[in-house]
Length: 101
Image 1 (cartoon, rainbow, N blue to C red):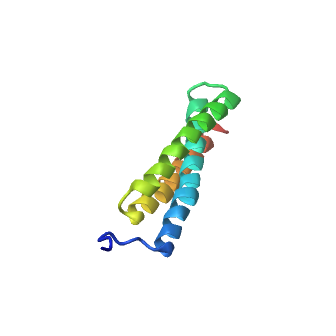
Image 2 (image 1 turned 120 degrees about the horizontal axis):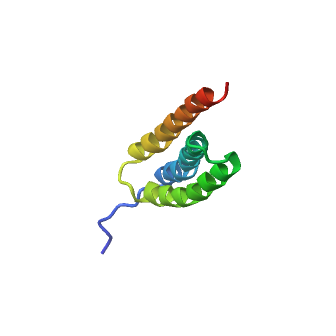
Image 3 (image 1 turned 60 degrees about the horizontal axis):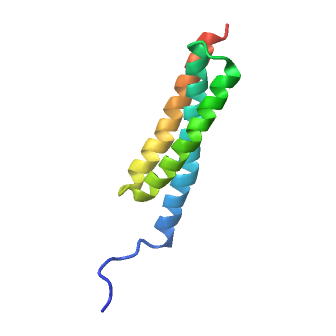
């Protein structure tokens, strides 16, 4: 008897893998940029803000990788990861331009 569950195929698996690694990288990069700018704006020394944001981003990256493979919709994964990363990077750039004269 054959299984009734169809396998997703190698092409879909590659797209999900790309979303997990590339989209996760973009999302965490935006998180770090916004975290550093935000924490620095709140008065934390730059390198402390950088290290704290980077450490938190490692945990976030793990969560994003797991979510990218568990989510049902690949389009939603790409929208959240790439869109969220772009929004956070844009917000960080805006905040940085307000901080630096």
